[in-house]
Image 1 (tube, helix red, strand yellow):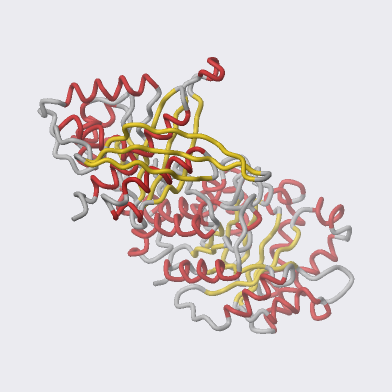
Image 2 (cartoon, helix red, strand yellow):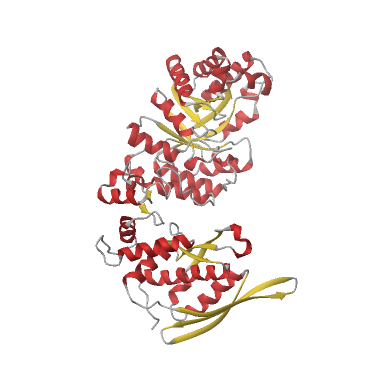
Length: 525
C-alpha cells in the first residue's frame, strides 16, 4: 500500500523525553516490532550519538527484519567549524546501519545566533554539508527543521533558505517542526502552504502539544499539502507531549479520508495504545480520544436513552473500528436506560419492563449519594444487579474479622484474623501482611481457598483510597476502589465506610465474590 500520508513514529526517541518514560533495549525492540506490524512507515529508534542504550538498540535491530517500516536513526547537523565527515556524531548516524537518517537543523535566527552562536551563512552550510554527506552514504534523509514556525515568524527569508539548503543537498523529506508547541493551526497552515509552494521535496509536520493543539496543528498542515506526519503513541513526549498518533491516524483515515496505515490495522489501534503504555509501565489514560476507556462512555440518562435507540446519536463512529468498546456508566445521573444497557454489557438480560428495574435504579442512586461510585467498579455493580434479580445466597459470608499490628525487631507487621461461613461450614484463619489491607486480603483468601481453589489465581492489582467529605476530618467517609485480576480478566470493586479497614473489606469481599460469580463457581468437591 502506498499511503496518502506517511506515519513517522518517534515514540522510541522523542517519546522517551517525556516525564516518567523509560524503555529498556528489549522494550524498544518489542515496540518497534509492534509498530512495524501495525503498518507505520518509519520508526525512529533513537539517537545513537547520545547514549549507549541507543547504540545497543541499533546494533540489535540489525538482526531484526521489518516488513513495513523503515528504521530511522536521529541526530543533528554537524558542528560549526568542521565538516560532516569529521563530525563523530554524524559518522555514528551512518554506522548505526539504519536505512533512514533524520537530522535536525536550526531554522530560527534566535537559535543560530544565541544557541549555536554562529552566522546565518554557516548555519546553511552545516545543513547542506550534513545532508549531502548522508546522501553520499546511501541514506534516505529526513530533515527536521527545528523551531520552523518560530523561525518563519522571526525572519521568513532565512527560514525558507534553510529549507531550500536541505532540499538542494538532497533531503528526501523536509519536516516543519513546531518545537515549542506554541503555534496556532492558522499559522501552521499558512507556513506549510508557503513551504509546499517553494519546495519540491515531500513536506512533513512535527508538532508538540504545549497549548493543546498538537493534533490540530498536524492536521492543519496535512490539509494544505504535508504528506508526512511525525508523532508518538499516546502523545508521549517532552513537557506536555508530542502530537498523538492514536488521534492523528484515525482522524486521517475516518475524517479526512486519507490512508496512512493498512485498513485492517485500525481495529488494533486501542490494543497498540495499551501495549505501549504497558511497556512504559503506565496505566492507560482513560480520557484519550479514540482509544481511551472513556472515549465511548455514556453517563447522562438522556444520552444513554438516545444511544439505546440510535447508536450514532451520541457516537461519532463505531468504537469497534479502532478496537475500543462502548461503556455505559452508572451514577446518580443514570436513568433506566443506563441500567438496562449496563446490565446487558455485564451479561444480564434486562429490559425496560423488568419488574425490579425502578427499585434497582433507586438503590444505585442512594448508594451514590452515600459515596459509592460504580464507574470503575463493574464487579460491585454486577453483584448489586445480581442480588436485585435473584434470591441466591452469597457464596460466602464474613462473620467477623480483626486487624492488629505487632513489632518484629525494628519493624512492624500487620496481622489479620477472619471468620468466614461457606454454606454450613466455617473457617477461621490468620494472615500477615505489609499493611492492614494486605493482611486482611491474605487471611480472607486463605480462609476461602479451601472451598474455592480457583481463588488462588485472583490477585489484587491496584488499590485506591479517596476521602469523600474531608471537612469531617478523621471521621470522614472513605471510598476504596480495588482492581483485581485472575490473569485473563480485570475488574473493579468498591467499598465505602468511615472506617478505611471496613471499606477495604467490602471491596475485597466483592472482588472475591465477583471472581466466583464470573466463573459460575461451586464448592470444591
